Image 1: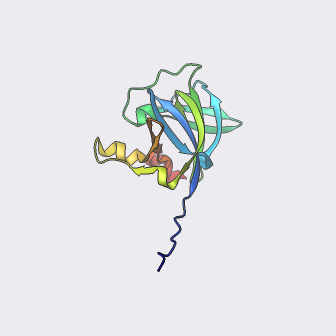
Image 2: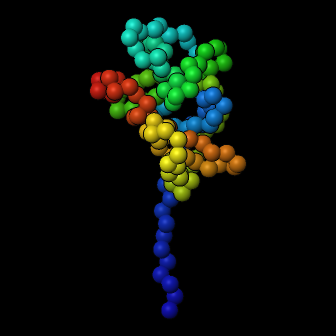
Image 3: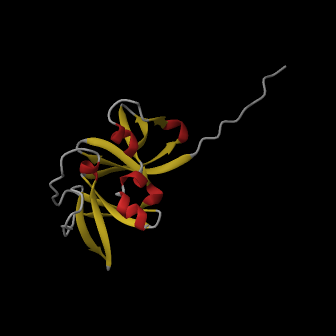
Length: 155
């Protein structure tokens, strides 16, 4: 008797890949509202160091998060080469300061691997999965965790 055919449903997700401190990261494209060049931000007193400040985005005050610093790297010295990825999570609009956008790609649910249990707990908090792609590993950023608690509570 023939074996029953089982279907494996794979879900595809579009992501934007980008570089931070020479490493590849990505976020779900559905959370991205726009990509823009670096604009100097106005610092806010008593804000965490990874919050670079705020910019005016068509009349809205947009907080800018230095993603590298949020992930535990040194603060980024922004220049005109840097990019701000404007994202929205649970109603909260914010910008991520990254080095450069590198690709837009489709990934399947089978491409997503769990974040290894090595490194810091902080890294596993911010990186929800790892994507293996052509000789490189791309870290899938959990945008909900990137937001400072104070910002997430306002959303």
